[in-house]
Image 1 (tube, rainbow, N blue to C red):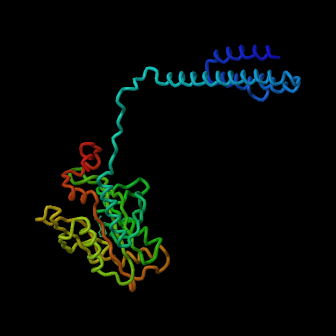
Image 2 (image 1 turned 90 degrees about the vertical axis):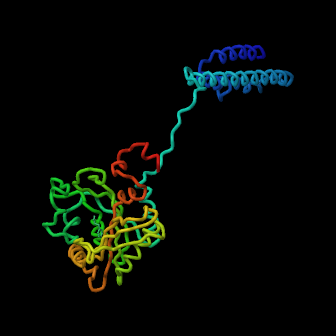
Amino acid sequence: MESQIQSLQTKALEAIASCIDESQLEAQRVGLLGKGGELTGFSDRMRELSKEEKPRIGKVLNEVRAAVTAALETRKAALTAEREAKIFEGVDVTLPGVSFPAGAIHPITQLLDRTVRIFRRMGFALADGPDIETEWHCFDALNTPADHPARNEADTFYLPDGRLLRTHTSTIQIRTLEKMAPPVRIIAPGAAYRRDEVDATHLAQFNQMEGLYVDEDVTLGDLRGTLEFFFRELFGNDAEFRFRPHFFPFTEPSFEVDIKASALGGGRWLEIAGCGMVDPAVFEAVNARRGDHALDPERHTGFAFGFGLDRLAMIMSGVPDIRHFTDSDQRFLSQF
Ligand code: PHE
């Protein structure tokens, strides 16, 4: 038996040395040391031996098992190293690596995030609505007469089915009031679309921020206080405001907000937002659609406002051309 064990060692060491990959080597290991393996077989036969032979053969068997185990490990290390070396064949690992420059948040998104944070502090929740809208949500419910110029095919993108790309985010006032009853206090950022000639101050798609607050006893003072607080957070406490009477079909009275602040170069007034008290006609239109009287013009009042995020970002950063925001030019974007 001893010579059988010895010759198995010779044969095993040769087989291990000639394995050319890790799976062959694993097959050898199982064939030798596995459950039905050859060396294991000898261990099982130990009990056939006499008392005198047992210790001697046992010792030989242990030595052979140790030699085979060591050979398996050495060969495995060599094969692994060989395989890994192949991966890097032809690759100069001393070359400098490829750098992945970190991106940055787009300036409009930065302004949007700041805006949302400020309004959240005043209890405004986020709302949204679809970019493709019905004429009813975009115009009729907002008290806009059929002959209003904004409804013109020349100003608005109409789809063949009569729907349109919303020309302002005021549609979300309607979308929100359809679903909720007062108190309602939301802001809604989103894209708006107009068939404008694209130039330094116009894009056919731009970004607006809408606001709506409806409850009992909401006053023009609340509207002023809310907008002044917001714009002072953005432009600093020395900001001055002018609420200039204006006209929007869905607010009465309506205003345009002008601002002057040292952070904006001081000096001249800049027009930055439209706003007003929600016209009761809007409440009635939504009630008719809802089929209830959730909005009671006798009890409820509200204010709404809207401003352009692109225009605001231009004013704040002194960007002379709105098209920079959509050109994806790294030289422009990396400045923010
Ligand atoms: N929707 C108006 C616009 O696009 C802005 C506005 C919103 C005015 C809310 C009043 C109230 O010009």
